[in-house]
Length: 231
Image 1 (tube, one colour):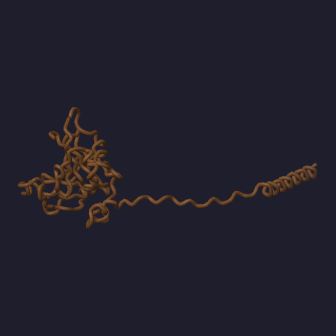
Image 2: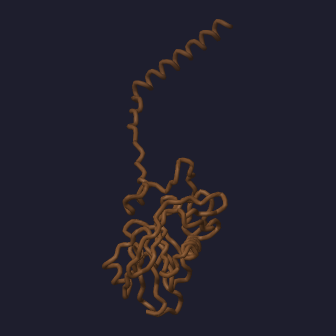
Image 3: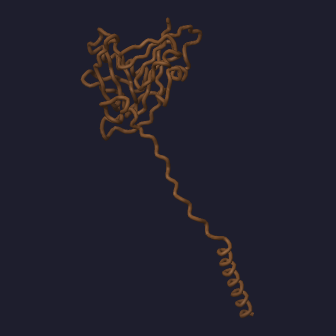
């Protein structure tokens, strides 16, 4: 009986081996798929092109951490800010330029001028705090303009004046002035004003309408768009 069982098992195994061989001859092996390379991510060093002469990245040193940033959120430890400060509007003078990191106490050092407590503040409030530091340092005879260019390598522009709420928004590709205003929700309800100013490098430029601005102006990191409540 055992001999019969052994013979049957041997026959079954032989059949399976032959079947596998036949399947391999009938169905050719799958060809190797080509390796598909991943697309390269765009460089984060876009701010350097906007501000020649400054560091390529928003870093003060090798210990400066990468911290998530939301332009409508609040600032905190590790956020690194690239900014320029101007005095006056008709013939503005640049009185400060730098890249600074917020320390563990929420302070932003502004060279030898002083420190601004910006931890826990939104960008519009932080800009006000920075301007106050320069006014208290004795530079109060002319208007102070704080132009925040980027935070954590995110280029931003500022909108204020006749708006629902002052805010900063990231600069995106091919942005127009109208798009920037639309992103913030536009003017206050019931407003009939149309004129506005755009500040760049401390210099204010007036436009009678969004149409006029879109024809003659390309938004850039650091710009301040101020919608006039009267014109």
